[in-house]
Image (tube, rainbow over all chains, first blue to last red):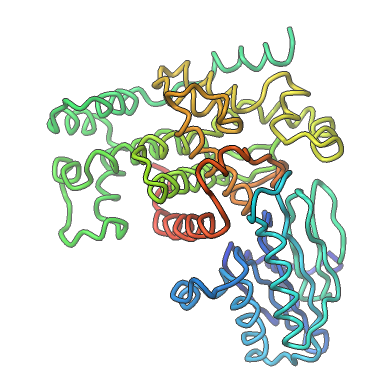
Length: 165
Length: 283
């Protein structure tokens, strides 16, 4: 961390989203496997959020998506954008970074959850005219994703290493 | 003495489960037991009594009346829920510890265990296999060997990570290569030393390689494999092993498991996990 002030950590669970405008906060999500982790940050207002989605599309699970929109990438990304805009962030300022979308050691049949999550995320972001500023996806290693509100940095911790994306 | 021999020796010294609960589990395995006998044994254990009353009155079962006696609770909960509760009260505290080797924080292995148990039951239901209760318990205990292998994984993590992430082994194959034994085998030896049924010992032993399981328990091993693989894929309770596991293609093909089924199973599993937060509390 680049600041010595007390930092508050907020933890995003699976199928959850947290937004914040407190520069003394960091938002963290652990154990991203095939799930998608996505951070959005507006550097002008220092507002940002982190989303942790399990599954790509809500199409076949509309009822579930109403109760738990962050479970799915398509509804989750929209929810995160809405919450940030309601908070006062400007959509065109948002820096988007994504992580996770891992696979198992071998793929089996059409079960390609990580790839599907990645594809849907890119599609939804494209539709919303948002570019991906950085990503750390694929492979089989677990990832922890961290958004520092004070600096706007998105960090990835994996296998004992920390890197910024 | 080789690493494997030392690990297996440690398994012999590992503390056994609470004898009251084990006794009860054994009693509940038989079809012929008196509710009164079950109640009497529970009442001898104040922690279990409290846990059972709390569970009976929790929103999980949606009961409208307040349950104030163990007798009433046992009657309402039924055998299946009672078995689950006994396991959560006995196995939970043991399996909740942080595992340094696997980089798993306190409570995460237990959460994974419950998720695998729910997912195994969901697969059994959706594939119409009548072994829901049995796979629930096997799923719950399938990674119990990690309690013992963790400190060894910690000591050899670099070596294991090279074997896994650079040389193409799955994580449990890397354990076997570097330690001489993997967590599945250690788990089965542990369960055997606790005198738990053969079905459980065999399913836990082969949950990563279900086709090697004897015909009698193979379907259960396959269901637990599917559940464990699915939960690992979503990173539930995952640590240094990540999603670095190999699916058993034969099982996926035989049981026709595709994206759609996996998606349904995991949505229901996450729902059940959310409703069962009581299982994460200390007994």
